[in-house]
Image 1 (spheres, one colour):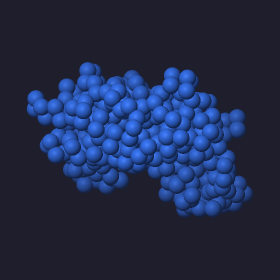
Image 2 (cartoon, one colour):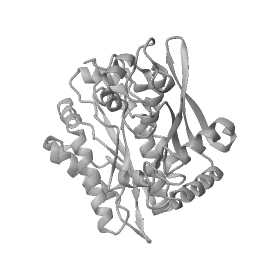
Image 3 (cartoon, helix red, strand yellow):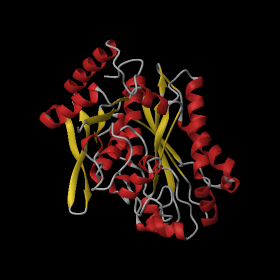
Image 4 (spheres, one colour):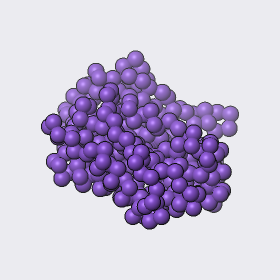
Length: 366
């Protein structure tokens, strides 16, 4: 007897991932086509990929899910475009971390962090700081690129502590970019970052331009003392967010890795291992206000995705291709305001009946 089970992750801003699991309750073995079918059928490659899609929808990393699967499953899969692997799972040719730029997960975390920051602090109290590296000799720039992760950590944590001391929201989140025009003219690895934070408590500004400059210069020079003598006067800029915080950040999340960057890596510059950051507890808050369901909520969302796509703000089906065949394994999209309200009613009624959910936040985020 075949059985469908759906798994969904709904993010605080209404985005969602939805996957289909076929035969979820079958023992984790993959018999051959000639072997007796457990519970009436055997596992096929498409069914296993459906299981993987559902696990990834729940937020698990594809490589982790694959490594934790029974050997028979891995032998059946061999390789899967769903996992984003360029070679077979046991390949040693994986790309260096950061070589693909900002990941889809990083973009989604930033969008949801910006959404929650705007709700908590208010759009008119959020600002963006842009911090760049002054013009410097190649040997200094190489050292800075090698220490970039620690520089960003030091700067964002110092900024977060300053916000907390002023009784503001301690969240600091943003992305890393490479200055493309400077890269084309001078080469190297001209890194800079954009981050958003609560800029005011009441009518008082928490962080001034001089504060941001001092924190940034201190963070860089603590890791690369040779940078002390650089001209830092124009290395930071603060601007007020005038529209949506999410839309403001999205302007800086679309750029990828071009050939000039790869040439700089070959010359001894270090590529950032991560192109986004979030400190001050924002990651925990995103997780807290997300809902993961393999119950009624996920089943209702699947039914709506199949029968009423117009009910969503936007929605796309997810397919995987194996050979000449494509398999539908799920959906990704964003709930409309009306659908979020309906999902909230279902969520509260299910909790009232004490039905088991994979994850239950303390308060419904819808």
